[in-house]
Image (tube, rainbow, N blue to C red; front, side, top):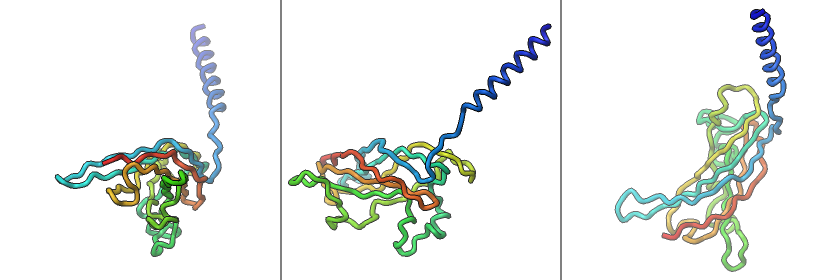
Length: 192
């Protein structure tokens, strides 16, 4: 009788495990990446040498999801088409696209620093590597967060202390699908 009870229990557990695994279905995301805003911070970087100026770095965090998980670029991938540099003419040399905006203190509207001639288009763009959750080349849905800090800037650069700035962000996957564009909340550049 104990053997029968044991077999019955094991069979019941197997049926339960099969039922639960059938309920766990992979999420269905678009193969075009989708992003949403998570966080933005102005980080103060102290000078390494006495008398040096502190620098600021904007750290942006986004949430992402992609239906086939083909996010990120390796340094080797960036050397070959369709991602190679091509003398600056290839947008897809990068996969994280950033356009900075600064608040006009007179009108209260945010203006692109590119259109104001304060920097060139793409100056804040960069590349992020394959997410650590992708361990092989199989297409599979992926979801996570990505933090990006494009560059540090000093006093008198594009942004001034107490400027209110925000950014428009999009990303691209390896199939060159470009995500939706999001706008970060505004952040104030720290006073010196």
